[in-house]
Image 1 (cartoon, chains in turn yellow, cyan):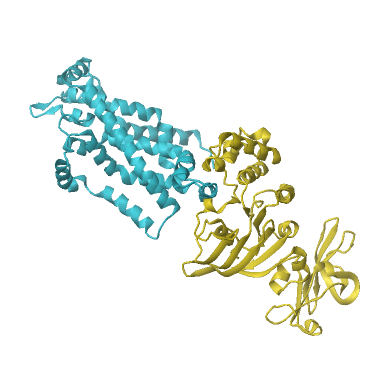
Image 2 (cartoon, helix red, strand yellow):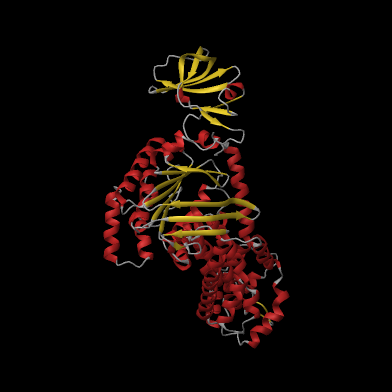
Length: 329
Length: 276
């Protein structure tokens, strides 16, 4: 079991309201990702759930029981930190064993669980090493191992991959997803990387200035963003926003078109290519269109368009419409 | 970044460093040399650096005239005891200040340190009377308490500086792993801060060993440590410089050896946190 329910949870540091009041339900077994720009309160929200920060007001229920005032250890949750937070003076075995030792578990059972976790995480050959002798990816696996041996109600991940290099990040991302599929335990994952959010989540919670902007599945957020903030945040490269007469034609204050929904060739918009990035599989170009501004365009790998070229563009997909307040129409 | 130094510049800095070291060490050197002189060459005028009549008689006399092992043992008990009690109090205090600081934590630390700037003689009478009422005069327990109190601000400050260097996330991880306050301090914080705790301990043992004011004021015979042992050689009948020097050399020798073997640890401890 691992259902987490937040009711009117508020957190302020002195005069500053970091989280003005949040209601959220995380169902048992769900992989929920908190995503948002730096300083949006996503890590604070995770720490409130963990019990590492006290709520200013509101209620946090874990599996139907009020956990608002419980210390971290009594909440039955495990957390993986951005910095791994391994105990540098202990071997890998002792690191993974530590929560079991704290729970005064039977020694034979401790050993059994450590061995099993090490096997799952490919750490069996490293059990007698210290964290300082491991690579970044191995350290992160130890941190995950320390979390899984407790068999917690839910896992909390605080930007766990941001200290890893790009290649390792992709690998670990898949490992965490596979772990979720095999354990079927609730996971709450904080990241500022929307690719991580899109690829891993069952449900994404988009946060901005301590408020929830939208909650939904990755594709729901991509296809039907509730407002301009979510539309701009989800999707890479960023959605193009156009105001003025062009938007007025669609009876909107602002229209949004994703870069992949613009085709190069023929069309009503004409402009000069600024930056062009060719990745092989895709081409990303920025086109300066008079009256519309700079448009991001995502084209096929063999687009054959370069800096300084004059191109014609046309919208070829969903046009998102927003009112003056930024809400989707 | 390493800077390239010309041989001339290196020679000058070496000479300067040796000169400063010699000036600082000279009184100790003079004391050791004097301890091997006869009483007459010790007071010779003009003074002679190296006397012709070397003797070990002063050491023999000092050993014979006083109970050195008892003074030595008292010094060990007082220095180590006050340090261990101090650490037991300072570790939780420094933990609180480093990891759950309040608005006034910095002020509190400054205030604690400021008590070290107060002349000891200012609290001599109240402390003496208190100790007298509590029957602590001339007891090792009394001196352990007094020296622990004197050095507590320094212990707390040093530990606070070490603890500040330990990432808070590691302690939070311990909390998530089910460690209560006791386990967090015993299993995570203390082992991680062990180098810092060791240098704090060493420095404090040295400070307590060398303490002369309170040890002389608060003891007479039973609990007197080596500082009182030195003082006992300056009798009203006059000063016997050679014997006094021999007694001083015997008093500082143990701590000098300890300091010599742990100098790496001490230097690291004193400069910890100065440069990342």
